Length: 122
Image (cartoon, rainbow, N blue to C red; front, side, top):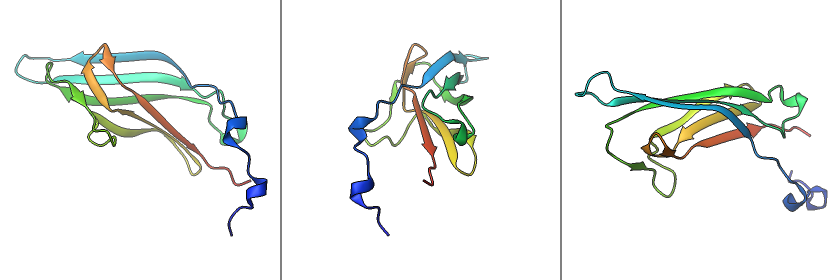
């Protein structure tokens, strides 16, 4: 059965605080000039909107990819073909957090996506 529209809340009534991301580190290492760089991104996140029933309010994410040191990579408009696709940071039966790097030009210029899902049975 569909939810009665009279019971729904207008999304504009909510003011969600942004995630807090700290300890952001990106490191690209190339042991020899003949191989690509191995890039690793890690950070700690805190979700100020999470409630204790979600059983998670913070965590650490990490993802990695290779880079030739020259090519600027930009995901397509629909988000396909990211430099580093979604990787789980936290996963249980009702909650997940995932990280992706859609675009990467160099270690000082990249985009980061943090996706989350909470299940609410109420």
